[in-house]
Every structure is written in structure tokens, then in C-alpha cells.
Amino acid sequence: MKKISIITPIYNEEETIPFLQNRIINTIGKIKNYQFNIVLINDGSKDKSLEMIRNCRKIDKRFEYISLSRNYGKEIAMLAGLDYAKDSDAVIIMDADLQDPPELIEELIREWEKGYDDVYAKRMSREGETWLKKITSKMYYQILEKISKVPIQKDTGDFRLLDKRCVIAICQMREQSRCSKSLFNWIGYHKKEILFERDKRIAGKTKWNYAKLIQLAIDGITSLSTAPLRWISYTSVAFIFISILYAGILGIGSLTGKIISGNSLFFLGILFLSSIQMIFISIIGEYLGRIFQETKHRPSYLIDQINGKKQTNQAKENKDEQEKNHTTDFSNYHYFTN
Ligand code: UDP
Ligand code: MG
Image (cartoon, rainbow, N blue to C red; front, side, top):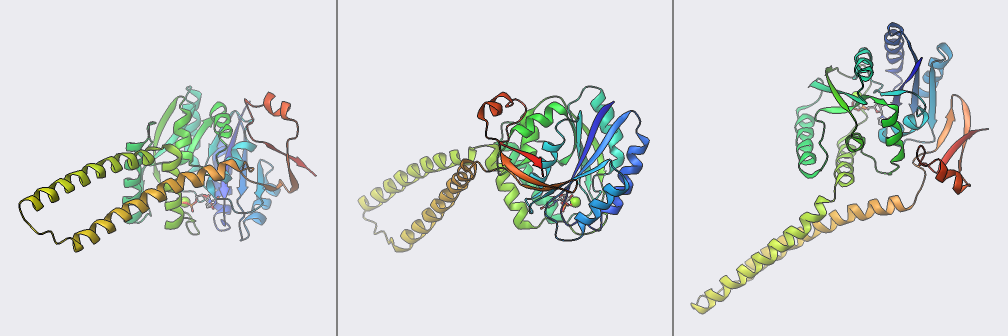
């Protein structure tokens, strides 16, 4: 029997977990001939989520859980889930708040069985989101599309089924500032889109605020391409031309005897150029910061416990073993149970 793991990142979802549990149990009860397990990743929740997750497991042993040592953010929580579920034949990524309806799982599996590796759900509408979020996300996709070399899936979140080989590929990419959207695109393989209506969050509040979204957007752009760095070169060339032109105009002006009152022009020029410079320096800073993060080679996350058992996160000492395993495991860390 093929094994399918459903992975769900959880951060302060005490209100949604009971709904999630019911809907998942109902849905997978109707799908025969597969072995399911549900991996809940507690991403450092501060409410009663962990307690409720434990309850899920008490009631139904198909529920497994990883509790991270603190809040790492959804991207890293998903990575932890994928690492954990690497041995399954397929992995389904789903939010805890039931905005991704579990009922779609059946269709995801059907497409997977036809031979697709990455079956992703594209939303037809964005119920329950503000117009500001809709407009900004549309603009973001347009920018991403323009600067990236890989095609971008519009209106698509992380809700999808990934074949084992996609999961292994994604687990090999250990960058610290992750943007799953670009990773899903980067791996390629055979993709299939299915459409769905994205529901409102069943309970609780969204964990996103604009600061987090902007961070995610910058991560997305800088992890996808170095195009912004190239803009710097283009613009500086343009500015050299503009200043040559300007010098020419001034020269001709003084030849015809015009007096150039330069003060205000001068200040305007300085202000303009220095603000451009500051933007450019901050773009370079973004990339530099990323290099700094990556060169630390820290593990992406630490696990506090798996299914109630305390974990010690220990670096692999044997380098040969790492190299032997490098096709399936790029992470320098493994976990063992006390
Ligand atoms: N989430 C997480 N860590 C975080 C923030 C969010 O694991 O730091 C989880 C959250 O519990 C949910 C999913 O990511 O399962 C999506 O979060 P949310 O519904 O708040 O995002 P939205 O749907 O508003 O984009
Ligand atoms: Mg949500």
C-alpha cells in the first residue's frame, strides 16, 4: 500500500485543531487503498496547540507530531515536515485553518496516480481577504514573473501533493531564508494544476501581518534571482549618460551667456542621487545579509520533541557517511531519541 503523509504547520491554532482533526479523519476515511499519516508540526505555539495535538494522537495514532524548539515561521515548519515525511510515497502540504479544504485530497491523489509529480491547487477566489492584500499579492506575482527565469504559479499557495522525488529534491535545498513558492518552481518535474475555492479561515486569526509579508516578498525576490543587482548597473550607466548630457547643456548655456542659478538644482540633484544610492546599497545589503546567513551553516531548525519523545539535535560527525547519503540527505543534522 502506498503511504501518503499530510503535513500541516501549526502556530497558535488551538481554535482550529478540533475542526482540522474531524475534517481530515472524515476525508481520509473515504479514501481506500492508501496508508495515511498526518504530521502536525508545532511551530513554537504559545497557546494550547501542543496539548491539542497530543490529544489528536491519543485518539488516532495516524496523527504524528514534531514540536520545534521555538517559532521558526511557516517555511521552516514545512521543511521540518518534509524532512520527517521523506520516506512516504507522496506528501500533501495543507494549512491548519481549513482554508485548504481536505476534501480536495482525493482529487490530488487521482492526478498523482496519472503520473504527475507536483499537483498544486490554484485558488479561483480569495474569500475573506482584504482588497489591499489582493492587490499587493497581484503586484508581487507580476514582479516575480518579470524577474525570474522559472515560471511562477499565480494564486497558488503551498497546498499541494508532492511525489517522493519532489520532496527529496526540496529537502536537499537547505537555504535559510526560504521561499517555497520558488523552490516548487525550481524543481520542475511534471506539474498539474487543479482549481478550488479558497475558504475563509475556520477559526482564529491569520498569523500574517504586513511586516511578515514584506519579509516573505523580499526573500522571494532575492532567493529567485540576482536581477535587482543588475538594475544597479543599468541605472548607474543611465545616470552617467544623464550627467554627461546635463554637463553639455550647462556648457552650451554658458557659451550663449546665460547665468545658471545652480543652488536649487544642485540640492535637488544631490537629494535625488543620494536616495538612489541608498536604495542600491540596501539591495546589495539584502544579498550580503543572505550570504551571511547561509555561510553560518546552522541547522535550519531544532526539534524539541517527536511524538512526545524529547530530541537531541546532533551534528553528524562522520563526513564519509554524509557524502554517501548526500543524494537523499543534505542536512548535516540527524535526530535521535533519548
Ligand atoms: N504558521 C506557522 N508558523 C508561523 C505562521 C503560520 O506554522 O509562524 C502556519 C499556520 O498555523 C497555518 C499556516 O501556517 O497552518 C498558514 O497561516 P495563516 O492561515 O495564518 O496564513 P494565511 O492563510 O493568512 O496566509
Ligand atoms: Mg490561513
